[in-house]
Image (cartoon, rainbow, N blue to C red):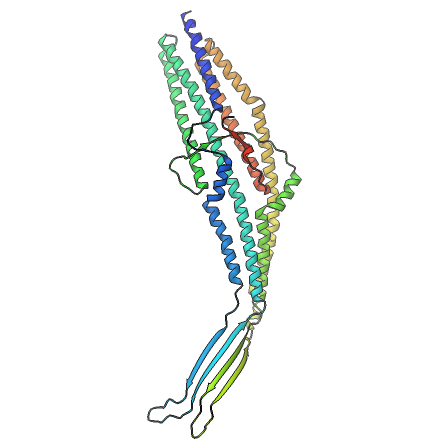
Length: 443
């Protein structure tokens, strides 16, 4: 009778404390000086990600190479001086006069410059397509990192509430031990459970801190401690997609597919360059000569000027070797084959991602349509029975563990659901991921 006198108010307090802790699940994780939302994070990624900045330099390099391809061959200027009056040893000068000549020449190519310009332009466009594809993957990977941070925050809340509940149970058992209602072993077991829950909470906090700190990598910075905590919460996403529309969109929008097509164009341009390299170059030269008077007694000659015009054409015996052209043809054929393969892979990736997303929606529905609610009802019933002395502490702990496991599994499924949507949109080549995926932490 005395036990019942104190048990009812005692476990009423525990009952209230438990559901107060459950309510805290919906409260902000911590009052941090800086809170981070998805939009702000993605804006930082776009602005400060170092790998993206490095990839942008590839486009700048390609632009510079395009400018370099536009240069013309430089003309050549040659000067020549001749002195025929230098006397040999023991002989007088022959007085054959002196001469000065100037020649201006230039090499002309047929079709090579234009082919190289077209190739450089296609390579620049390829660099732009590759940059677009890199940006598509960057946004997706950064979003998945943000989703992981939110998931770790939710798991931390589960551990935090579980730890508080088990600690309340241990404190209640300590009071019961003082009144002689339970033995020392039972009270000790409660304290062990509370300490174990505290260790689990510490690990959850470490996982959260690591996930938050890892976001700094995406924004091109390094932090020793997390500088911000999430200001949003995970929520499941249900959207309807038509497979045919997604497939058509992927073929039209995928940047890597555009890059594969552009690579085929580059290979065709390389073939054209190889063919134009076989064209015959020729040199044109214009010269002027000035010769002084020759006073030699045997063959005198007056002072005179002269002009020369010449053309030089190589004999292209090297064109008999068609190895470079054949290699370029094979590279073009290879690029075209790779593009057809890329189309098949893109369509397969889209369908796989769509099936995964639909499966994730069904799995989340299974939790939201009964599993989570039933586990909570069982836990409430166990606590009520424990309050009345009708069930054991171990049964309450089992119910608590089941409830925690279901909560954790539900959070994992919601995170998988959001990640599946991100992966689907990445594979389709569209990007409609917005703050609507998440909701403020205070909701």
